[in-house]
Length: 232
Image 1 (tube, rainbow, N blue to C red):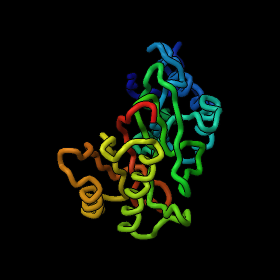
Image 2 (image 1 turned 135 degrees about the vertical axis):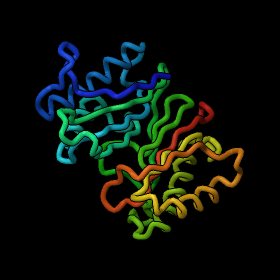
Image 3 (image 1 turned 60 degrees about the vertical axis):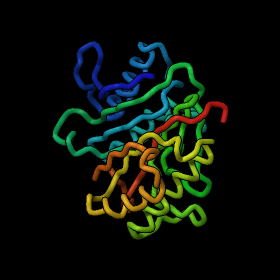
Image 4 (image 1 turned 45 degrees about the vertical axis):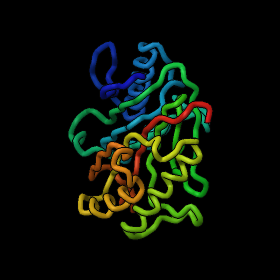
């Protein structure tokens, strides 16, 4: 396994941020490539990428760099993109963190009826390791997003269960949940669904809830990681 620290768009020769939005995005992804290769792997070994952007207007340039790095639909890492206010006023336009599993075959998975606008899968596996992109409160039958926090939360956990069925793992395979909230007032509602989904305290995933990074009308997103039985 390879876990990165923060990777930015610095020129490795000067250690200064590359000028230009497209150029800095490309450099950040090239730096990610250089790091995983130094560890003995390739970009095909990357299972999860978190991208932190200074400005939403830079997202198209980030997606262009993403598609250069991961051009094949159905063979991409899971991803989360966050508009990160801490970068405002700095030369840094983008920061990346990734997790890789060297030598494992990457596979992509989707939830029927629920997807992403960006070119990212709902979930990715690398051998026995599993990672999800953001799982939100969308109705798989209609493709529509629920309006209330309660319904979005219910649907998000239902969609997590559906994704795990696609991956071939039980809910017990979920080892960690990052729960992104619109604000911390949602905590009680989310905790209720969490306990209903994982009633056995000895088999409950570790969780980190943050009021961070929710786009549009999303009130909750789940990001799951775990281990499944290989061959599923």
